[in-house]
Length: 124
Figure 1 (cartoon, rainbow, N blue to C red):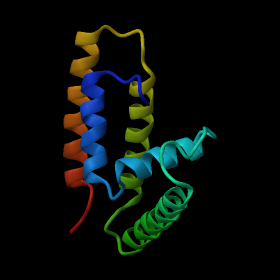
Figure 2 (figure 1 turned 90 degrees about the horizontal axis):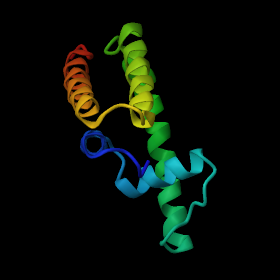
Figure 3 (figure 1 turned 30 degrees about the horizontal axis):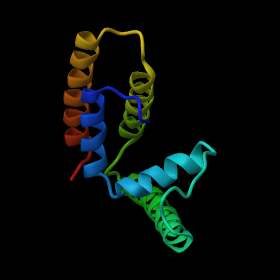
Figure 4 (figure 1 turned 90 degrees about the vertical axis):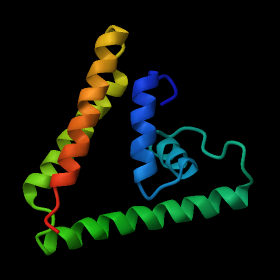
């Protein structure tokens, strides 16, 4: 996560700000998902409180997706599109051989597409 370039970091930060998770919570989720040392610079009590909040938020997101799917607000195409976007973002975050100018333009292009897709994805 730490070696992303500046443009991708900005895009990542923008996604994080629009999510329901805090930076610390995303850090905890990332580390737990990748079996890394988890606690860092916080007390055990604060860590486990944050971990509990992460689990509750993840469950809430999953139930919300089910509910939105049930009511037809999100259709199968929207879910598939989100999955494809996520896979492309993973590939972008791991790309290392691309020159900086091309990668910066790619990040800007993808950010623009992501914003447009998310703004048209729901039926409310």
